[in-house]
Image (cartoon, rainbow, N blue to C red; front, top):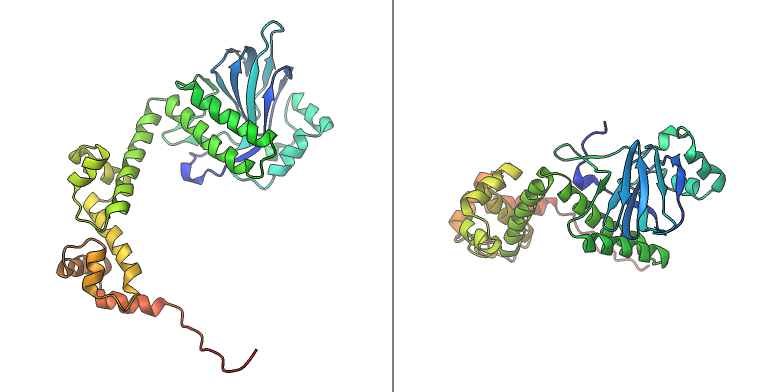
Amino acid sequence: MAPETRLESLTPYIREAGLQRRDAWRIARRIYDHQFLYCFSGAAHMMLREQYYHITPGHLVIIPPNVPHKLWFDEQQLGELYWFHCDFFLMDDRQWIYDFYNTAEKYITLFGAELRHKKHIRDNPIFPGGVPLPEILKPTHPEEAEYHFRAMHRAYAGGDALWQLIARRSFYAILDIVLRQTTGEAPRSANRAYAVNQIKAYIAKHYFEPMTVADICGDTGLNTEYASKLFRRQTGQKLVEYISRFRVNQAKKLLIDPDLSITNVAEMVGFSNENYFCSVLKNLEGRTPSQLRAHLLSLLPEEEPHSTHGR
């Protein structure tokens, strides 16, 4: 089993995107990367490993690497599926797979009993909480999933110069839909992270103003006791400590300006008075404001003396 994937480490690469109508494979195929498919009309049939699925509008299918699968359509009810091939991380051999898929003599080897080039087979990611990728689901908001599949296909087919950027944005949105719906734990985990990010965003926007936990919760809609406990559990820091550290980090940027007094700096980052600012700084940095200023100024690169010679 692959190690758990850290969400912040995702660097998706969308190999290509398309629209599938008649192209099918009744002989079991295996692929090196992941393929996402979304049915927006008609119907299709799929065997994934030994499991049969009837694909109808609103179904999202994720085909993992090196898993045998078949796809076919009814002549009376042709399905239309958006699809894309992708890596979850930026791999050195990303072009190799693209070239392989687009060379007919190589592509047909995907229909063999096994993949020949083992080193190019991608891992199937495991997400926080031990959540694996599902192989099929029906998004609760199908219009959102369809929008992002359409946007990705339109950018790719239209030769948009920024198509990879557009595709990554849509990939993240689709993955968000998948993970939130996969298990009961994924949405709760995502909601906790979202709540903490709301708190951090409020602090970043209002750090220079008087601020209490009640102020933050009034803006974010969180209960004060819950917010404090959640923040500490998710970040390992008390909320009031995070606020102080955030203000001190902002103060450091201002202390390198010798024209600003210590009192000015304290007020500009939200401390009610200079004495309180000095106390917090001494506690967190082990220095007085003057000592910290001298230290920060010593880190600045020296200006090169102006040359007296002509060029």
